[in-house]
Image (cartoon, rainbow, N blue to C red):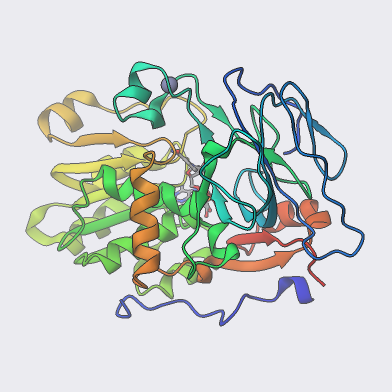
Amino acid sequence: MPHRQRSGSGRLPTAAQGRTSRPGRCPRTLRAAASLDLTPGRPDHQPNPPPTRDQGVRTHEGSRQSSRGQGCRVRRRCARAEGSHEAAGTIVEVGAGVENLRVGDRVALESHLPCGHCFACRTGDAHTCERTQILGMHFDGVFAERVAVPHRICVPLPDGVPLETGALLESAGVAVHAIQRAGYSVAGRGVLVSGAGPVGMVVARLASLMGAAYVMVIEPNPFRRAEAERLGVITMEPGDGVTQRSRELSGHRGGADVAFECSEAASALPTLFDAVRREGTVVTVGHPGRPVPIDVAAQINKRGITPRGIFGRRLWETWEQTLLLLNSGRLDLDWLITHRLQLSQVDEAMELLTGDACKVLLVPGLG
Ligand SMILES: NC(=O)c1ccc[n+]([C@@H]2O[C@H](COP(=O)([O-])OP(=O)(O)OC[C@H]3O[C@@H](n4cnc5c(N)ncnc54)[C@H](O)[C@@H]3O)[C@@H](O)[C@H]2O)c1
Ligand SMILES: [Zn+2]
């Protein structure tokens, strides 16, 4: 079936080669917006009227966004199915109050819209803003042919970065943030990654690129384990053997130096605390659906393990870092794409994500 064909070369680089358009409330402070169009080049396409102050912005499908204020319009080229908040596109209209973007600019979208005024926002930690609004959750997401978004979440793409790659950047940025949160300390280190979803895969890839002594990926899904193996990393299933294998790999060090939890499985976290060495680091990315008990006395006090967590991307340090890596040619993300579907195939895309898939792109106008 055509939609199940792999992307481009379909080859992974080796280590050596270096929902919805829920009409949610928009923030009262929103000053400008962009709308995304998913059908570039369609003959019957007519741009929607530009958003004006105190006027709602219509998507191409006719659903409304409750955004206020000035706005701009973006033609979206592709979006990932899962989450409804990962997209890239081309701007087709810009509102009167938007000075940093022009029609024709190609942009990726940051999914978090921090308030910009609180202590965290004013001191460089906007990723922790407690008034953050999230694309697809607090305001309309990207499963539409055209959506309006605040201009502040548009990230211009360098010329060499295709729109499809742009649609991967929000998620890849989570992985880059995890590496940043570990102090970039993966070179020469033993690295564990729990979960070979798109985030864990990019963490593993980055750790390899940055010179990790070894990377072991823990993943129950055989398809995703096989994908991880193509990165040249060690893989294994979750379970009792993880700690033992980690100790075998690290010898007298007593465990891996750093572990990244990218699965959200509650059972994964205690295992990672066991599998890192004394004074090791555990970075949590996945959000377990319930509190996870950790033996503070044994793991944090006596073994000296440092737990760290991340939320989204550092604004805008993570984007700058990710774009630098992409632009330099060191980091390639396109191998994450296993399927391309039409926008109308959202349900099918969701099904795929529970099986043999990694990144599923919804590409408007796909033949
Ligand atoms: N902290 C943040 O800001 C942030 C941002 C984005 C995503 N996330 C979370 O990060 C996680 C990774 O994102 P993703 O898009 O790669 O998700 P994903 O669901 O595609 O990947 C998770 C992977 O973990 C695997 N898994 C399940 N149980 C496991 C176990 N016990 N041990 C190891 N692996 C196991 C799954 O098979 C899957 O391949 C998700 O939980 C997501 O919600 C967090
Ligand atoms: Zn804030």
